[in-house]
Image 1 (tube, rainbow, N blue to C red):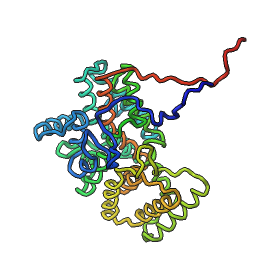
Image 2: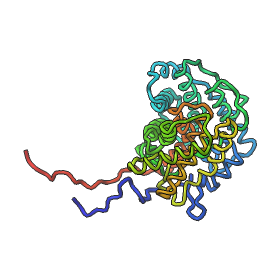
Image 3: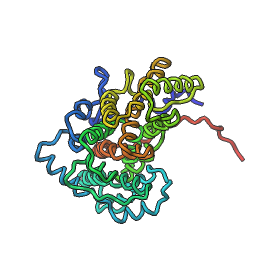
Image 4: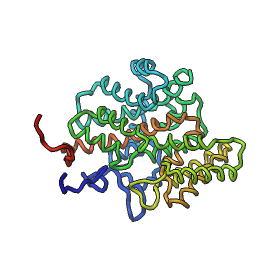
Length: 378
């Protein structure tokens, strides 16, 4: 053993600069290129936020029109990719489908071996355009449903919902989904983003970096938490005819028992935020609107009961995954599809970091402290 101080999980280690996003400790607010994310969610489309993350500024009307036309032109599911998805088992986790799709799209891209700034921007936009069709079709095929072709008269979020459910959604649902996509888009050097930057630092290609990032996001300690939230709700039991108060009481009792047994309950706490996840109020407001829209007060009861019990016992606040999970559930997404939705959103942040890493690259290669058997002979 050495006397070297070990920072497990790289906690507290600052490894590089980034201009993409930060958490402002003075306001406890997540900023994308300087803009508070709650303001972006209230005023912008997801397309505008994607443009901001990649270009550093919000688009002008002409720039947005050009960008939107480019995104809409790439929405259709590549027939070759569809055939590969169809060959995969329906019980494979949807994140495995996303991971495979990113790799296939990379291998088939006309700029596959070109990592110039212009090529990487093209690849980023193409992935941004293509992933909703992958996520939507994978959910549909699991239910024995046919593919729904994209529409070029709908915005990104409205079209994503259209391809998933085959019905045009009301503005309230589209707005709530758009908010979730903006809130999930970027979060500095999180596990999957750092994974993407490590791969990029080797001078590997953008699709390889995104594929690796999807693998990191699959883990329940990162992106999989939104799925785990709904598993908790399911374990407690969702009773459609139950009052808010009764649901809250059952959830509170469940949480108290889980904490007494020292179970890890997903959807609470965050390494970065000391005073609660700044994205939660915006996502919770969207959840409240969906609960009212679908007439499901019992879900709010479960939400409130768990949140109250955790706060009283541990003073730990919810993170973004906590309100996002039941919001997606109400919209009709299968629980295993929640994290792939996260993928479709976070592609924007990942690729912004990939391009930033490429522009000022240094191989990411940390050291380790050896604690095994010392040198010996046979």
